[in-house]
Amino acid sequence: MADGVIRLHGSDNVVIALQDLAPGAVVAAVAAPLPGAVPRGHKIAAQAIAKGDMVIRYGQIIGQATADIPAGAHIHSHNLGMGPHSSDYAIGAECRPLPALPPRSFMGYHRPDGTVGTRNYLGILTSVNCSGSVARFIAEAAEKDPVLAAMPGIDGIVPIVHQTGCGMSGTNEGYATLMRTLKGYARNRTSAVSFWWASAVR
View 1 (spheres, helix red, strand yellow):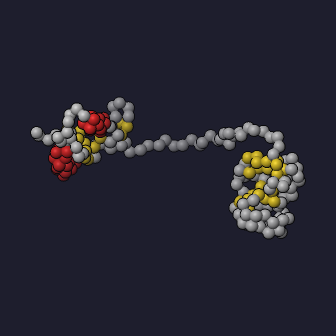
View 2 (spheres, rainbow, N blue to C red):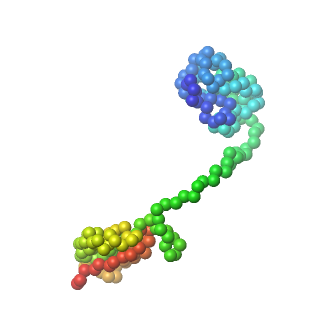
View 3 (tube, rainbow, N blue to C red):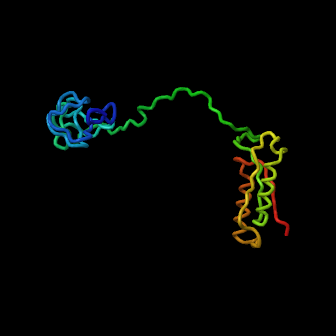
């Protein structure tokens, strides 16, 4: 960006006016003073463009000069049209191999099955909401127990509770959804590796 214009791509032969420019204005990206006014948002020839040459914006062909266009001239429908040109967009032509990166790592651990984890929590699942408080009390007591703190690789203990289970049918859709959700928690090895099951005594 320079003196009220912007070049959108390094290979462009036009720049774009960021403000209304008066005749005779001098901008750093253009080889000559502007021979005429250029409205904001319009194209300006950054260099002389011969009749029949392609006009390049965003690094792509946007049209063909229908007349000789001197440097600094306003480019618009009066001197820009369509003509035969390659329709190959050259996708990926600017692709360059990335430099070799140093090996990356993160604070995790390997599991016996080849996967990795980032945390190692003991989870307490409850089959019914009646045991929710019990699960919380277990977690709270265990967090304060020095035995847990001394266990290597154990980050903590968390209660996984819900507000259903008690008094519900064991055969309906709600029960099936609850059990499916609890089983999903038990199988999820992203963070938890072990579960205790706390159920209310009926």
